[in-house]
Length: 287
Image (cartoon, rainbow, N blue to C red; front, side, top):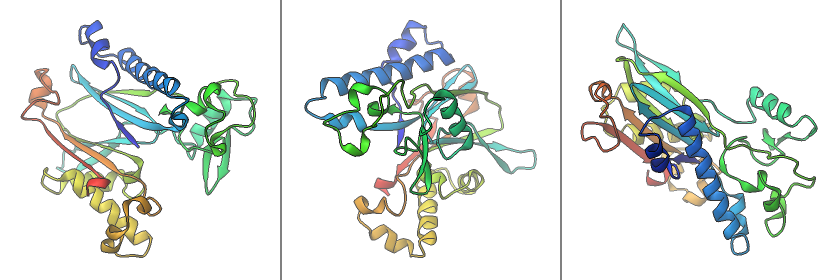
């Protein structure tokens, strides 16, 4: 899942710092979001215990003083389409993916849990934290972070047999700062369902070679065509499958494409309510 944020209490944190955006203010917003959700899980533990097993990836982009800050948890991804001198575009990935299938993430987990030989387990064809979940960072998933939520009455499949000495997952984002340049054209924010079927380069090519309107829908359609091809079936037949069953054919997909207006950015007027800014948003459930 892609957490398309309005981060919990971000406006309040921003006000405290007079609107100044730093890595610290973004990290504080993530922390407040995590703590806010943990409070809800605690309050509803007796009524809805499985809320402790709910979590989401989170991908955030904030522009401040001509700098793009990208903060990420989980395996969603943001890719920049950057104009070259010859008129073409290059694809530049601006986010880190916290997925146990990445060797670097497995080493990170092993370093954080040196006394746990089963911190990552290869199961059902992929590496997973404790053999359960692929991502190592998220908002939520309290059953993997706090022992008081890793017990009955949540389902047995979510419970860890051995005592939880420390959180098995983290809500601390990886944050990248990218100084914006006039040849930075657009940004593609998308959940891993898109990137399973499209390369960074292919996604940038699709956006670049078509009208801006409908860019997000166009990317999802291209990914679904590729998912159908891999299953040796027709796209039209894939579309007919009930959405509750279709998860077995492709992961959920959410896409936002943001086209950068450098005149507005340089004047400090770039925000989500600017009339001249252009954003294309689409989720697979709407397609």
